[in-house]
Length: 228
Image 1: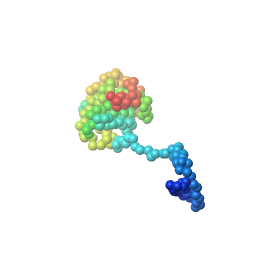
Image 2: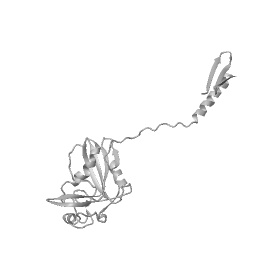
Image 3: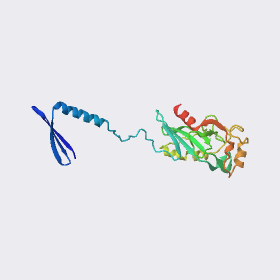
Image 4: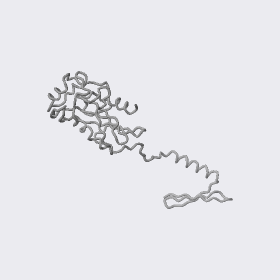
């Protein structure tokens, strides 16, 4: 360990005792030179890069599985964007049940405020993995507004934490379907009544060529919901 001791004397030059590698020697300097040496030493220290430990800027709460984007608004609203890969589900349509109807890849936007879902939206996407540039498509069945993807579905269940939202897609798909907001020729490219589509597609994979384009990308849509 290197060590320097400075002894100031009113009538003599400053005495500097330097200990280095077990050896000790002394030098004498006038106070002006000593001050200059100290200033130069401080300048040298300023050139040394100081690496500070990173500190957290944003820490999200625990989020549901398949969350692809998250935002918190100034009014404490949480927005969770949740993807749901394609799946076959049993669908109840009026008083009839259809088995293993194919549902395409879905992406939901769920707004949670005061432990309640206050807004909910859904669109479809074709890509294997949802990315910012992924194109969005209209939900091909019923109960969804074609323009903005808003769900015509009410559920007043308390949201105790955001992780609970991971069951939302299947909960919604298990609800009975009807013809509300289904428009043959514009909701999808099947150009058939909804009952016929559900009957004919049982136990098959979804045909993505039947989706209707929205002209939106995931990045554009998600950003518009967050900033508006």
